[in-house]
Amino acid sequence: MTSPTYEEKREILEGSFLFKKLSPVEIDTLLKFSLVERYPAGREIYAKGSLGDSMMAVLRGRVKMSSVSAEGKEIVLNIMNAGEIFGEIALIDRGERSADAVAMTECEILVLHRRDFIPILEKHADICILLLKILCQRLRQTSEQVEDVLFRHLESRLAKALLHLVESAGMHQVNGSPTDLHLSQRELGNHAGGSRESVNKHLQSWHRAGLIRLGKNSIEILDLAAIERLV
Image (cartoon, rainbow, N blue to C red; front, side):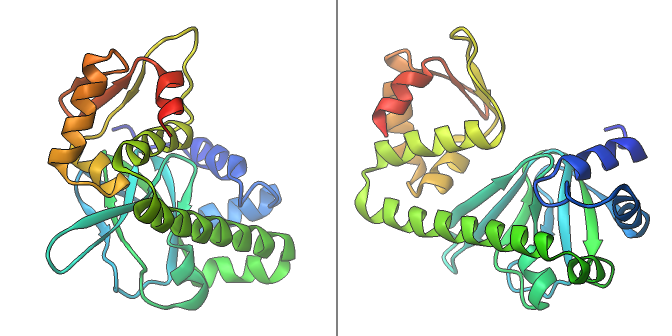
């Protein structure tokens, strides 16, 4: 993986929902004090419960936010794509990490430490409001996930999870062209709250019906409209 240039990092921050209101000088200040860390696919970025005083922005790759029970059962809370931030809770309160963060693909992560970012927050009430909006959005998403597990059947949850992944990755079907998601059936099941066996049963049914095509660690959506009707 080629390292991002200074201008590429700057462009990602300037296009971010959170940072786009900063002045060019403030963006340069953040980049000056930030670090770039690289992680291979499957490597842990930080663990739930660990102390943290930094926030991360995904420069390249995808990061999985999840929680694992004592019995080893995992639930995927979110998947972060290039340009998105995570770890903001620990940056604000200096508390424990609320989830595990793991590189799903080879990743490059921009790390912003609290000591460098808090002075900017103190000068920008609008950035504080944006952070609050992000936190509220994620709280709503978590509440929705709990309701889905309680009230929706698995097929509907799987369809909804696929649509969420397509939307979060910024992927759209054009003229009926396939949409390819690079994740395993186990990862999808963790995202939707279902066992691999149950997930495989529904995916094989969709495959036979021509809605999707299954590959090694990939799910290609052939009929997005049909998936939407299953939600």
